[in-house]
Length: 166
Image (cartoon, rainbow, N blue to C red; front, top):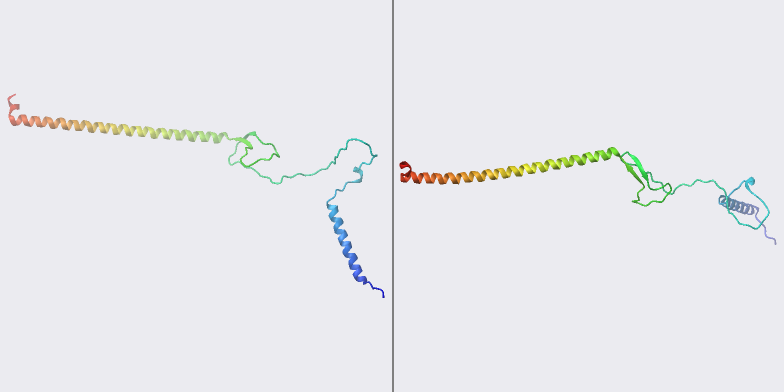
């Protein structure tokens, strides 16, 4: 007895093998380089230096791009890092200047210094007033003691009638 082959199973197996071959060839084709025939140079083999050079045009893009923006306007005084250089957090990239902001900060500092000076002047005036009042109180105490003694002396003289004889 001869074994019988099922033609439909054979056809299905051929289709599956064909699909697998197609998928493998397509995968290999995406990993290869296709070069036009007119760019290939064929010559005789000679001894010499091997230079592996394949002119290709490509597009290189950075893995991460960060855009910087200044809060205040101004001008770039100095660029410290060139394009494409690797930088770390905290590295100085460029020196910026803003003359109007510098002027505004200087004016604010001058205003603050002026107000501090005014406060010191007021403190000095308050201290001078306190000393004047203390001096005036001391003078009043002196006058009270002086006049009290004078009054006691006058009463004593009036009581002894010595003031009338003179």
